[in-house]
Image 1: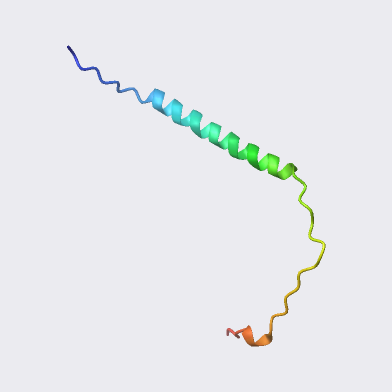
Image 2: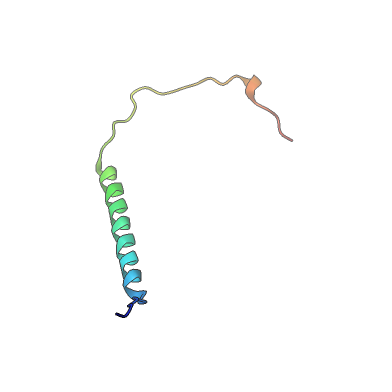
Length: 59
């Protein structure tokens, strides 16, 4: 009985490229569909007063 070792890296390279392409398509699809959702804008302005004591002067 002979031991046969597959040394071809072409098939593994093609598999990696296909997986990366599918992941990229999935991420782009998620971003596309999130872009289509209309999120409501806030109705009230958010204002926070920061006292002058908190600022540091950098020279």
